[in-house]
Image 1: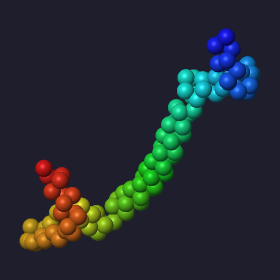
Image 2 (image 1 turned 180 degrees about the vertical axis):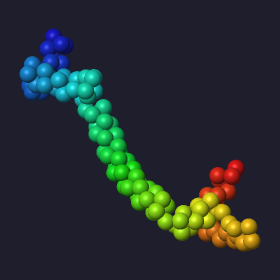
Image 3 (image 1 turned 60 degrees about the horizontal axis):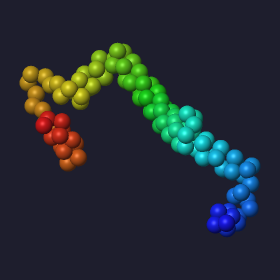
Length: 112
């Protein structure tokens, strides 16, 4: 008798076996399946991140190729690159390095 009163309180839509089947199916697909929506969302985010990384590295490779070509074809560019990047100098020269505060902080972190 109490069981019947409890069942009568449940709306008819929730007592329908097709509705319950659809709800269980949605819960299963969303949470428990090996291809669930949560993992698909994470995979899509990772895919977008990898595409951005690919674009960045493609651009970086292209710019490095241009620099390499310049260095291989002109000795003045090679000397300029060595002086700027590796702080090379001629024996009779003095070298003064002027850094912005952010470069100085970055350099200090690397040396620790």
